[in-house]
Length: 260
Ligand SMILES: [Zn+2]
Image (cartoon, rainbow, N blue to C red; front, side):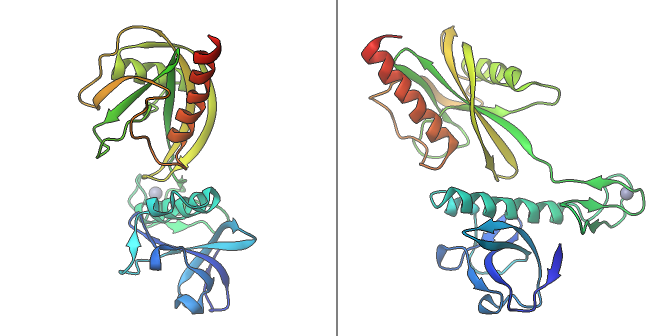
């Protein structure tokens, strides 16, 4: 429920606009609305963290607006709530008018939705499902350098679910498109909301089945098999990619020490 801040409301403040978040001194503001000069602004509670409300204020503070990536290596719950706020702010900003009839919309008072009173359409935030998969071959893991990443980091394969696909089909298609290999023994591991801009990463592990790696140069700069004890630069801790790689390294080591 949206409310106009009187000033004595307290908690964590996700102040967001245009996909960015306000992080004065690099941290999420915590305290009363007055302490952060937010009184008079419109806010909506979007969760709780450490027993205190987390508020969303859709507003551009001009200074100290930055990417929510700054919070990746902090507490996972805090990063998740900040990402939720940034995505909701983007949803409201991109749904001011109805896509069907063009009339101005209003924000629902009861749920996270925008309503068109003219044609009765109801819009919810869109989430783009995305698969990410770690592939093991014996004591090795398949890692690739993605064109969209700068620097020398290697990570696992990933891609968006297409309309009408199952997750299993997406994994098989992405792995084939990007590396030309076939996999088996696909297992679901976990998921992570990924607010860049509105993905849900669904993480899998799989085993190599057949084929020789030939990477797709449109997506990847390089791809190859890496022994678990000779790994290149990896994604930062806190990412689901890093967790997948670490879980796969455990399997690689067990394979190396005991056989399959
Ligand atoms: Zn409409």
